[in-house]
Image (cartoon, rainbow, N blue to C red; front, side, top):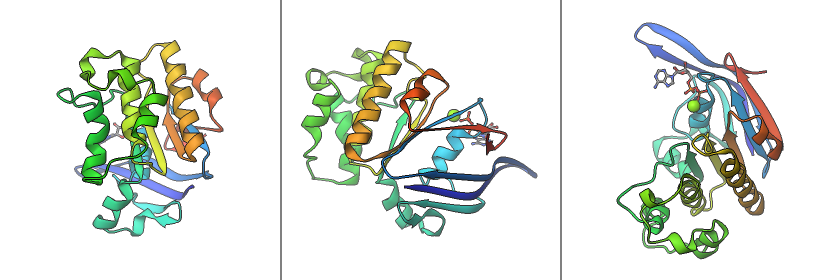
Length: 217
Ligand SMILES: Nc1ncnc2c1ncn2[C@@H]1O[C@H](COP(=O)(O)OP(=O)(O)O)[C@@H](O)[C@H]1O
Ligand SMILES: [Mg+2]
């Protein structure tokens, strides 16, 4: 469950304060998925980073599954971030690691020595079982993004934040990747917030919000 109320965020460039998000309100019930649209520079990535606990709002309330993020100290925020799965437009895979190592890398950082029991099912569901020893450079864009999805889901996050995950994919692959992401999040009761430029892709989502001038339209 995501509950944002009266959120303000500004960037300061020397002495100049530029408002990015202004008096933003958002409510996403548990297990519900949200598509986030808006022109370039409208603040979509900034909002995802606030929800991920990577940026702090100037004022306002951000409550994720009952936790008020603005009240967490650094150690608590670090623990909170373990419950978040991030997916990026450019995949952000480590090129010197195999598919399997990429999927497990973050998991091992967060939970050293623990073997995730969902690994085999996840790689099967994402069609990666026969690619586990390949390096990312040998994969298509769609396959690389499926590795990105596996890496985000391996830690069983409460929320997935995906920043234009289909921005580098053709239309057919975009639909496949979004369908997979939606199905996996629904199956596991995960809140999905996905930034996209594609009006077509919004049809897969329960909720659609458009950011303009720092507010929702
Ligand atoms: N690190 C930064 N420092 C200063 N300004 C930034 C930074 N990141 C983003 N901005 C500015 O914040 C605004 C919103 O950016 P962003 O959230 O990345 O938008 P979007 O993801 O919708 O394209 C833009 O005007 C952008 O230039
Ligand atoms: Mg962005």
